[in-house]
Each structure stands twice: as C-alpha cells, then as structure tokens.
Amino acid sequence: MQSFIQPFNVLLPLLYGTALLFYVFYLSSGSSKIGSLGQKILGISLLIHLGYFIARSNLEYFPITNSFDSLSMVAASIALIYFIIERSTGEGKTGAFFISISFAFQAVASMFHVDTIQIHELLANPVFGVHVFLTLTGISALAISGIYGLMYWMLARQIKSHNLGIIYNGMPPLDQLETMGRLSSVLGLVSLGLGLLMGHFYAYKMLNTFFPADMKIIINDVAWLIYLIGWIIVKLKNYNGIRMSKLSFWGFIGFAAAIMAANFISTSFHQFN
Image (cartoon, rainbow, N blue to C red; front, top):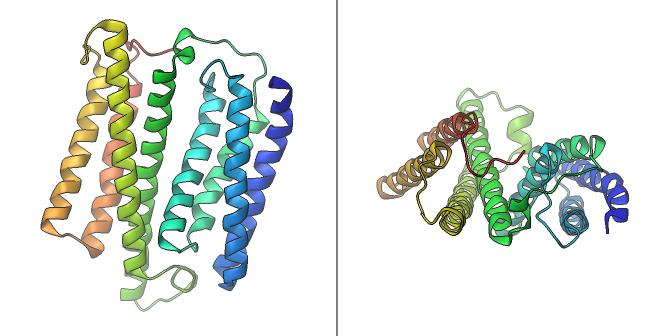
C-alpha cells in the first residue's frame, strides 16, 4: 500500500487548496452555490485523507511515525472539525480561515514527507492509536473554538467603532460565531476527554496503573479538567457575547501553554520520536 503514498502527497494539497479557493470566493461573493461546492470538495478531501492514512498505516500500525505525519493528522483534524461545524450550523463563511490552516499544514507535510520510517511498538497498538487521534482532534477543536472567540471579539470591536470593513462584510452574525465557537468547544472537550481516558487505559495495560507518576500526563489531565470547569461555569453563569469570546480565546491560550509545558518534559513513558 505504500506505493499509493506519493499520489496522495500530491493530491491532498491540491484538494485542500481547491477547497480553500472556493471558500475564499464564497467569503468575498456570498454565492451559496460556490460555498456548497467548497463544502463538497472539502468532504472529498477528508475521504482522500482517510485513504492516505490507511495506505500510510499499511493496515499494521497507527500512521504517525514522525513530526510530518503528525502535521498531516492535525491538518485532517482541523478540516474534520470545521466540516462538522459547517454541516451542523449551515454557515460556511469562516471556512477560508480554517481550511487555509489545513492546506498549509498538509502542504508542508507532503513537501517533507519521509519514505523511510521506523515503527515503534506503541504504533502497533490500536488503543494507543485511538488515544492519539482523539487527543489531536480534541486539541484542534479547542483551537478552533479559541479562533472563533477571537473572530467574535474583533467583529464586535469593529461594530462598536462603526468601522465596518471587510471583516464585517464577510463574517457571519455575532450570534452565529458564538454558536459555532460553543459547538467547537463541546467537540473539543468530548474528544480530548475520551482521548485522555484511552491514554489512561493504555497506561493501565502497560504499567498496571491508571494514573502513572508522569508529569506530562498529570499536566494534560489538569489542563483538561480546568478547561472543563471553566466551560461549566460559563454555562451556569450563562456568559455570552464579548465576555464569552474573551474566555474562549484566553482559555485556549492558557490550555495551549500548559500542553507546551508538558511536551518539554522528556521523562514520559509514551515518548517515541
């Protein structure tokens, strides 16, 4: 199946790039027909990306063997989360922002693709593979939620200053942005929570304990728990509008900082690169 990798490496950036062009035209023109075509091409891109991961795995291991494979997985995760949000809300005018990220990440991953790979034993375990996929997808969704918060914040300031430029003309209404951000945060919390839970099951299988003394795991768990508590408080207090947008943005910045701090810790039992 590895013989299919190179065609996928060429096709994926082309597909994401084409979807991006349609979303850019949709943002500038407002044509629902163009937007619909962009969504269809994005759906095809995700299916082709799935085919790439199947070929890359050779049906024997999880297909993240180096940092560029990880970048490709993040590109697919961002595209998938955005696709779900657009299908759920019927709003595609923010697609240009997120698909541009997927396109850039996949272009770099394809450009620096590594044919010679070393397979760590962890990659052959399906539980570990599900853990990694759900974790990356959850972090991607929380990042998208933070970006929606920033979009809301910028658009609200633009409206308040009566400086209604290109951002105002192209963006969906404020309440729609808030809805999309909330949906993304829910998807992120659920996916990341399940990913971390799968990680604990794997730790139990390997080390006979659900909670190993690993600072990387502890930081990730605490960061997710704090994010979850913050989300519950937002729901109970019924925060919305500009306050909600700031919490979404700065909440993810704090979460990302914690994740980065955890990744600097090298003494982790599941480090394999």
